[in-house]
Length: 126
Image 1 (cartoon, helix red, strand yellow):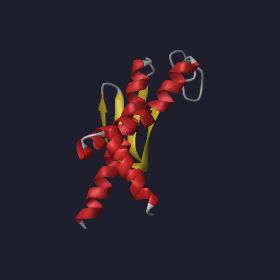
Image 2 (cartoon, rainbow, N blue to C red):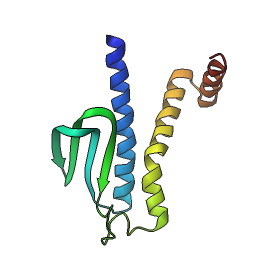
Image 3 (cartoon, rainbow, N blue to C red):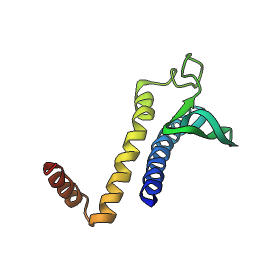
Image 4 (cartoon, one colour):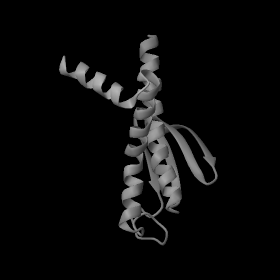
């Protein structure tokens, strides 16, 4: 049972960090963030902090960030941004996941490349 709790905790942490990447990138690009939700569907808990609604939703299989101007080209919105800003916002979640993975490799193996090599060797046995 504890294994499942740890698995769910790690999944929620990964989703949260990924979505924070999008949120921070949007803030850097001066795009208003409306919502950051962990999970989909009906909202269970929510809190508004500095104009951003942080939510925990019922289906914990992902998350999302909603930005101003996602569906129309309003001034300062996502669609009105130059392509480099849009790309930065879209890729920021993945970039943060890579950074978290690198930190985990460094903590667990003392060396990022050594950890990658060990994991790739383990995968070859599967």
